[in-house]
Length: 134
Image (cartoon, rainbow, N blue to C red; front, side, top):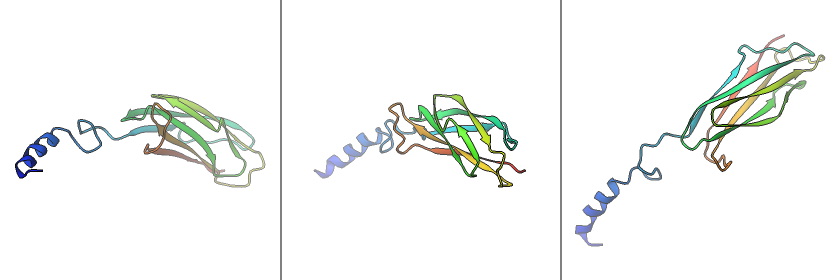
């Protein structure tokens, strides 16, 4: 390439924005996830509903996959996985066995961003860790 062509190439590239971001200045992929009620508690042998609200979707995040994971034997959630499309909410029924021996039971709800084609590669992950005491 001739030396006089470099300035022209630099001018042309300057109008293209950041590398990998068409037009530049795009918002990063993100979302907000809130679990309620807070504080949350389930009596031994009982059941309670936890609501998970997804808002403030940015970038390519079109939906969020929510997944229940128990941190304590005897604490269960149903359903185990749900998908919220756009901003919205989902409910999980949390049940605790009556013979639970852990004095500080806990569980997680994980939220994984997905694009409109259900791909989660490069998308953010959030979580709510819910713990209470007996």
